[in-house]
Length: 163
Image (cartoon, rainbow, N blue to C red):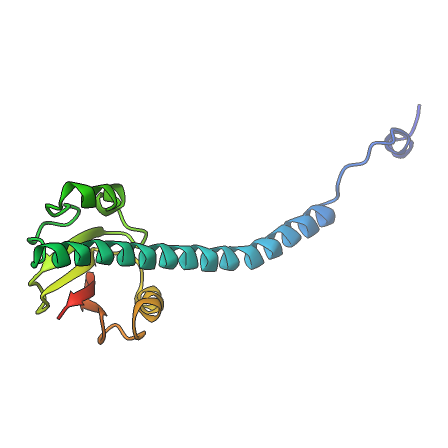
């Protein structure tokens, strides 16, 4: 009869030890600790660029409307597109306006609200003030209390088209 030691050593099969498994888990954990913050930075940068681009596209559309008609469109609820001429509606990115923004919340056209003549706002956003300040730096002066991009209430930011 063969001993237990010779029986296991002669099979040639060897499993991983607990130490080897722990080393692999630690390496995966370190890689994740390095990759997740980089991913979040990239995600915020993408959201910021998209929001800035959308603000500029919508601002241009409303400014064209005002130039052609002599007045700003009437105020509407969040996510509702103001009555715009048909050719302008085709270039307006209606699906973006009616959907949830990259910052959370809804797009809103504001005429005569918050003490300004006209502006484009996002209501009920879900991002923090640091991210809004980064967007403000790309659109305006980097201060949420001054300039053309302002935080007008606890849950609304506005890109002001006319003071």
